Image 1 (spheres, rainbow, N blue to C red):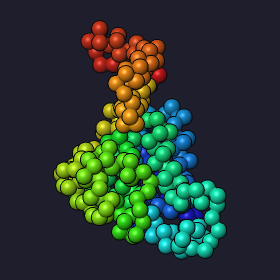
Image 2 (image 1 turned 30 degrees about the vertical axis):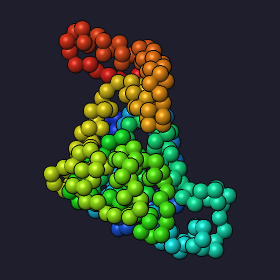
Image 3 (image 1 turned 45 degrees about the horizontal axis):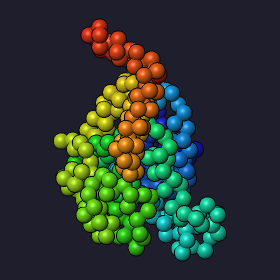
Image 4 (image 1 turned 90 degrees about the vertical axis):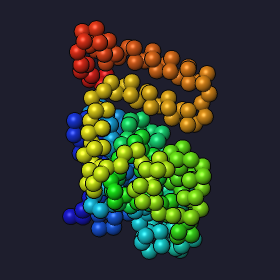
Length: 275
């Protein structure tokens, strides 16, 4: 039986998604990307999953697109690099489900996504990390917009994500040079949020943070993050005030809002149920 390229489990409301091709530093091929898209679309509607944690097995987070596929050496064609026929879907977007996974993470799943990063997060792997709400990393972490190193222009939303997570100057440096940044540089440029002191600590730290989120009023959390992303999409203050008013009206009718108010009056810790 072939080894699963994507692992999934649920722990205390946290859905843990693990890239599982450790022998290839979790480089993503077409079937794996398709599986990730399908999984995340399903997770949007799973009430037992309030937060998603994304990580990689073995020595890396995700080294990007699988080199064998990128070279045109698999059954799946790639424009310009193989003579194999292409599906209509791929003719419109060569990156196919690789790019669709980023769209699903940012726009569709509608739940917090936390990254636990070790080793390389490069190319598409960089995009997957940047698409998360928060990134925990250890000293082995390395990041690169590696597409240009292979002669490709950036894809998977890297040029949209980078300026929002770091700054325009750093984003341009990364997409123009494909430079590899070490963990300290990633922290300096804001590409990671928490840098652990030792290797192997990113996953437990990210899990601890994710579990705290999962114990919160998840309807309010989901709507709050949606408003923040609206700002990134160019919403004005007037529009955000309207979005917040709608979100406030929705959350005021949740059981968690009633529990939060009651616990505050009773001077105790609230017990939220995510509804």
